[in-house]
Image (cartoon, rainbow, N blue to C red; front, top):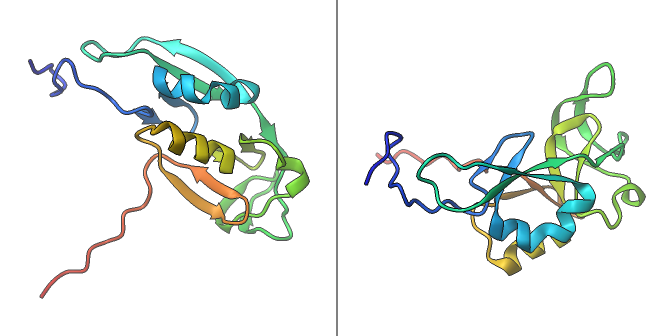
Length: 156
């Protein structure tokens, strides 16, 4: 059966079926695997999936916002008020983010930052739909919904 949205009514979504820059939506399986890392960093809110979508899902609202940038080491364009307009390389004060697997940062609140323990748990649990882009290789990757896809070279 096909629903008006073009999906089969029993379609199985990944463990991270939707991620806006603000609120990731997680499957029950992802929440079970990550709960101990998620709960100290924010709140899990159950949502009703669209008609025809199987499973239980929760929105994760990250409330842990840290003032963690090492501005002297970041390669970024800053705006008045402390926000970041564009960045080429991020740098954090290690003592501020030590032992914190997932967080947001002042100046770049729309992005979720994760460190190695989060990445390792996602991998160990075999969760689907997560993409990680390293922006500060010595500390860990950033959680991001759609990693850039390399452009194909034209043949001929």
